[in-house]
Length: 269
Image (tube, one colour):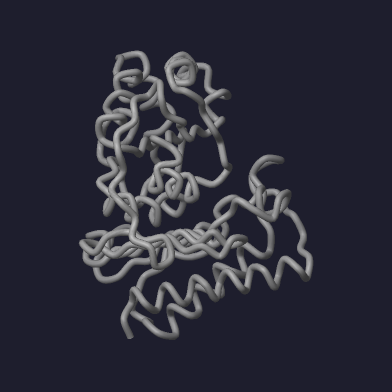
């Protein structure tokens, strides 16, 4: 069976599973603190996806946010990187603005990416070399918007880090406006559709960005760290994504020794 088509079908089925479980009710649990939450639905959906993949493709590797694949350190063969519910707090409080994110790598190269807006039943997807789509509509490459004329998606977590606040404050001042949707995967879709000129993230894990990054690749969107380095596939990282000229404008704000030194303390092992 074709991996790309299988994944599209699986992700929609997983969305239906989430909706069914939501109606049944669920417990809210803390992972590391009051702002880092998880539900049984997160873990059950990850298991749903894992079991379906393994039944069809037993040799494929799977890295999931909640349970699976922590032993995976390289991308030979097929590797799926899965976030069963990106935007768990939104799922709990809003029943909106959350997504399933899946990125698939084949022999160390991006193969296909998916972001499924579950509550609106919209699938963003891309296969390497074949463009990116919103359901069946092909998306166009993003157009340049200057920083002063665009909205930037921006995680609020930088407010908690005194050592990097100055640079982020400058970004907020220079942009037309900033927004935080609470789902990195959906932020990537906003950049893909031109609703955001760019998105800047304090810290993302592989499952947060794997699907959106592959979609971005197909639209000419530049995706790098805030120190203008390649984003590692299997490690946590800061990220800026947008039209390459706008990303370069944003990177200039962070291009100073003080930020780079403090960035390395915060983001690197």
